[in-house]
Length: 590
Image (tube, rainbow, N blue to C red; front, side, top):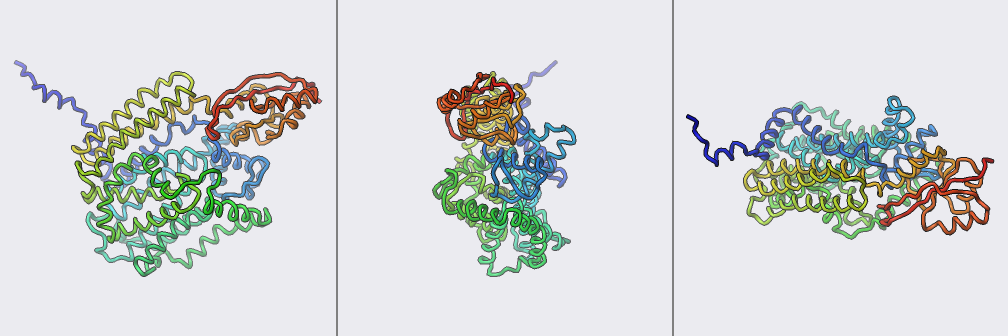
C-alpha cells in the first residue's frame, strides 16, 4: 500500500534551492585552478557576448578608434593615427595595432567585409576583459584561498561597467588588463618581502615558494610598457600611486627589489621608445603638443567635451557601474577599517584609495576612468567574506542587498520604455528575460539571511547574466531609432554610390564614416550641392535643420535632384530627435 508523502516533504522535494546549488558549483570549481579559470571564462562569455556582434558601432569614441584603425589598414601607415581628414593625436598606437591585427585575421576568413565588421575591432576588448577577470583571480590568490579568489573574479565578471567596456572597440578594457598584470606582479613582490606570518587567516593560495623574481619583473615592466603604448601615462599612474603610498606607509621601498627597477626600466623604455621617437619625427612633434598639452592636461584642469563632474561623482556612479557586487562592498567597510593595518588590506587600500581620490579631484569625469580600481573593491569584499566579517543580516549595512532587485527593476523599466519608444518588433525574447532577471534578483535578496553572501551573490549573478542578455542582445540591436548611421549606410549601399560621392550635413557622426567609407564628405550646403551637380551616383544626407539652406543653394545652382528616403531617429549623443532626407542627383554624369 502506497504511503502518501506529507505536503511539506513534497514541497521540499521540488524545491529548486538555486542558491545552494550554486554554492556547491562554486565549491566544485574551487578544487583546482583549471576549474576555477574555466568557470570564470564561461561566466565572462555569458556576460560579455550578448550584443557583441549584433550591436551597431557606438558613437563617438568606439567609432573613432575603429575608423582610425581602418584608415591604418587602408593606407598601410601604422605609425601616424588619422581619423577621416584629421590627425588623431590623443592616444598612443597600441590599441590600433591590436585592432588591426584582429581585422587582418578576420579578412583571411571574411574577405573585404571584415573592414566594416565592428565586432572584429571589439575582439581585443573582449579578450582583455576576460583576461582582466582572470587577472583579478590571480591577484586575489596572493591574499585569499582559491575559493575566495574565484569569488572575487566572479564579482568582476558580472560587473556592469566591465561588460560595457568588453563590447567597445576602444582602450579601456585593454588598459585594465595591463594595469592588473602590473598590480599582480607588484602584489607578489610586496608579499615576498614581508615576514612569513604577515598575512592573517585564511591562508592565501599563493605562498611565494619557488617564485622567480625575474618572471615577476618581466611581467611588471612589460605590462607597464604595453599600458603606455595603449594609453600613455595611465598605467604608470594606476601603478605608481600605490607604490608611492606603500613606500610612505612602510617607510621603505624594499618591496621593489624583486621587480629589478633598473633593468626593468631599461626594458620598458626599449619597448616603448621606438614608436614614440617615430611619431615625433612623423608629426614634427604635433602628437605631443596635442596629446599632452591639450588632451591630458585639459582633462585634469577642465571638464573636456562636457564631461565635467564635481568631487564625489565616482562614488555616486559606482552604485550602478559596479552592480551587482556593489551591494556587498559597503558590508565589508567595518572589516576593512578594523584590518587596515594588515598586510593584505594595506596593499589593497594603497591600490584603491589614493587613485580614487586623484580622479575625484580631476575635472573630467567619465565612469570608466576608475574601472581599474574595481578589482581592489572585489578582493576586499571577498576577503571580508572569507573572514566571516561581512555585515550580518539584520545589520543596517545589510540593507544594501536590496540594490539587487532595485537596480534590476530600474534597468528593466528604462530598457522597456526605451524599446517601446525607439524599438522595432515586439522584442519577444526581452520581456520574459527581464521578468526572470527581476525575480532572480529578488530571490537573491530574500535568500541572503538564509544562504549567506556567497549563495545570494551567485543567484543575483544569474540575474545579471539574464538581464545582460535581454538588454544587449534582445533590445538594443532592435532599437532602430538609435542606429541612424547603419540605416543611412544601408541606403547608400542600395543606391550603389561610393563614399566619395556622398555628402552629409549636419549629421556627421564617426560611425557614418566607418560604415559608409573614409571618403565621405562632411561639408556645408554649398559643397553638398556642388557634389550633386557633378551628376552620376551622388547622394546627400541632409538634416531637417539644413533643408532650407540646402534647397536655397540647389535652386541657385539649378540642381536637378530627387528625394530617395527619409531616416528618422534619435541621436543619443545630442539627445534629440532627427530627420535626415537622402537626396540623389538627377544630373547627367560629367
